[in-house]
Length: 216
Ligand code: DX5
Ligand code: ZN
Image (cartoon, rainbow, N blue to C red; front, side, top):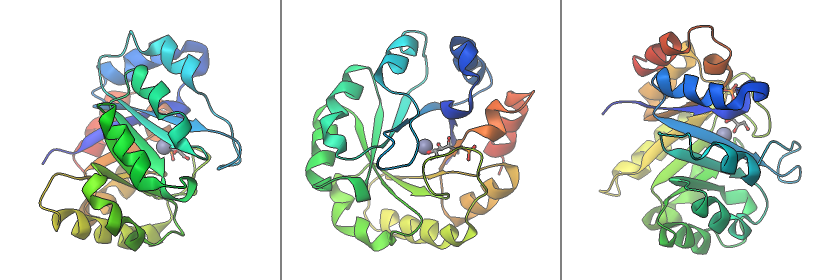
C-alpha cells in the first residue's frame, strides 16, 4: 500500500498561506493536516474555522482535521461543513468518544481517534467498529518541531495489529517529529499515513522531502 503524506499546515509560513497550500499540493502532499488547538486540551492555540474557510476553495487535496480540543463534539459539524474529509478527535478529550465518532461518520467524514504518548493503545479496542483512522501521537500534542518519542513505536505496532484484526481498512497515522529517518521506523512499525510539518514546510525543496517520506 502506498504511504500517504499529510502535510501539517502548522509549519507553514502564515504570511503566505495560500501559496504554502499550493506548494504542498504541487509537491505531492496527499492530504493537508489541519491542527486545531484550544489552549486547554493542549497548552497552545493554533488556528480554526476562519482559516480553513479561507483556504478551502483553493484546496484540491483532502483536509485531515486534527482536533486537539476539549469536547470536540461541539465543533465536528463546523469542520464537516467546511469540507473536512477526515476528522480526528482525542480519546482523552471526549466525554463520549464512540458517540462523537458516530456523529463524525454521519456527517460524511472519516472518523479518526488519537491518543497521546502516555495513553495505552488498548483504550482504542472498543472504539474500533467506529473508527477509520488511528492517530498515534509520536510527540506530546501542542507544538510542531519536536523530536519523536521513540517509545511510541511499540504503540504503532500494537495499533497495526488491532487494525489488521478488524478485517476492514483502518489507517494508522503518526504525527510529530517525522522526517526521513523517523519515517522509516514508523512505516516499519505499521504506519501508513505520515503527518509532517517542519520537515516539509521548512524545506527549500518540499517535493524532494515528500518523495523521501514516500520511500521510507
Ligand atoms: C503537534 C501537531 C503536529 C505538528 C507536527 O501537536 O499535531 O501535526 O504540526 O509538526 P512536526 O512535523 O514539525 O513535528
Ligand atoms: Zn497534528
